[in-house]
Image (cartoon, rainbow, N blue to C red; front, side):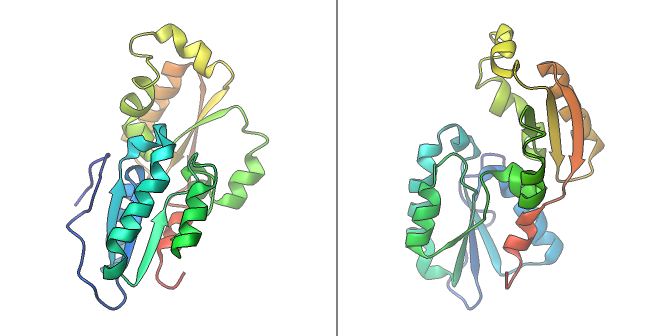
Length: 212
């Protein structure tokens, strides 16, 4: 079952308490990828609940939202994983996860853990003028970039927002020509040079794997 891009609760309903059950609390922007990994690896012990992807535009909501879900579902699961990086929370999410005793994926944002934290860090100096897309953002560019920034109404603002960028880097989770074409179109619309990097699921797969 594919998940909506703004998934706010679960794929198929949360499971009752049982040995080895794992709940993943994730960003809605990762729902499609987490469910794909679950199917691929047959992680039947794993359930997913998500907060709205659009909260990336309101990062102050993320930490309270995660805290509420942990408290709501803690009794039903042996393990709770938080599939959010810092994502603009300024360290408050990491501190909350530590206090709650749940494990959070490492990294500043999903671009870093998709690309692999070490590789992303190595390239950081050379890509300071890069604007990143993931599969989710390639699919949802208008809803999460173009319209929220008002570019649908004021395209003259492109220079103000993106004038300091030089290229758009599409960090591709899947080898999908249609998404490649969409990401390339996004680069053209922003007036940026285009680069595609096939990352797969990066550090996300290892974070979700049993025993990791």
